[in-house]
Amino acid sequence: RVVPVDGNTIDVRVTYRVDVKRIGFGRDPDFEADIRRVDGRIIVDGTEIPGGTSFVRFSTVEEYVYTIEAPAWVRLELAGDDGDVEIENWQAPIELTLDDGDVEIAGGDIGMLELRFDDGDISLSDVAGELSLAGDDGDVLMDLCRFPFARIGLEDGDVLMRDCAGELVVTLDDGDVALFDVASERVELRGDDGDVRIDLPNAGPVDLDVELDDGDIDVVYAEGLSAEFLVTTDDGRVDVHSDGVRDYAQTEHRTSGTIGGGEGRIRIRTDDGDISVRRLG
Image (cartoon, rainbow, N blue to C red; front, side):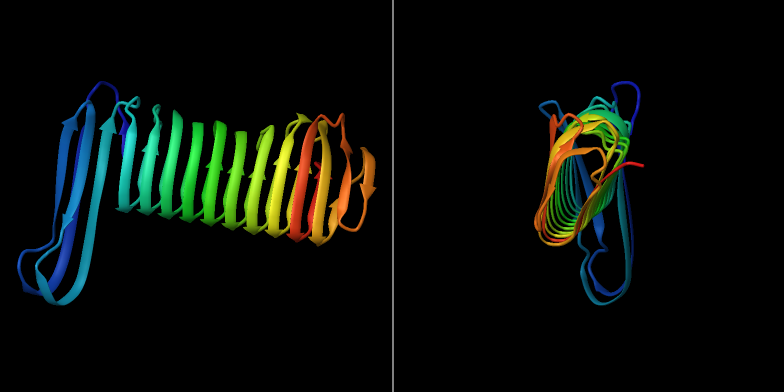
């Protein structure tokens, strides 16, 4: 857990608890924390020390928690195998590398967030800054976030964003994407298997590019949107509400037209799935 404090002091507390019931010999499991300063960096390393030989082990309870209190302008580089991370109201770049654990970041203008994980859920709330996120298995939830650019890549997981803003690129193999009230002039989305819901709340031009192998796509746009659109599917139903749409044309696999002044671009394609494009309200 990382907590911002006033002043120029960094305080690190490591709490370790172990409860082992076993039959064997040798010492019990232990934990060591090494804290040192190297070239302006404060390095905290924790090492779990295994216990002696156990012939029979009845139960094991192990817990170790890092609590870091530091000025919010300190850059964070966190790496771990198994454990959750909580950060609040930070004001400096954050780099996270985790194998298994959930991440919760609330508040702050972090400038840059780089996050790599294998298995875990990510929750970002009221965070501003450029985002680079890559994971194997986990869901991503974002609320009230502002980013100049965000890149999200998942193997297996869902992405849910509410009331966010910024340029967005999402790539995933298996998972659903829902973007509610996301103000972005550019959204690029690529997926293999999953459904997509995108709300475009802002009027004006937009650059939206969505491509799926297997999944349904539902796009809802606000009145005043300006874009030319092209919708294609190999095997699926296309439903475009053509009220107020100019140059509307539809064939078996292709639907096109112009919304408003046609300044932006909407391109939607799925191999196997239904597509809906409709105006809000």
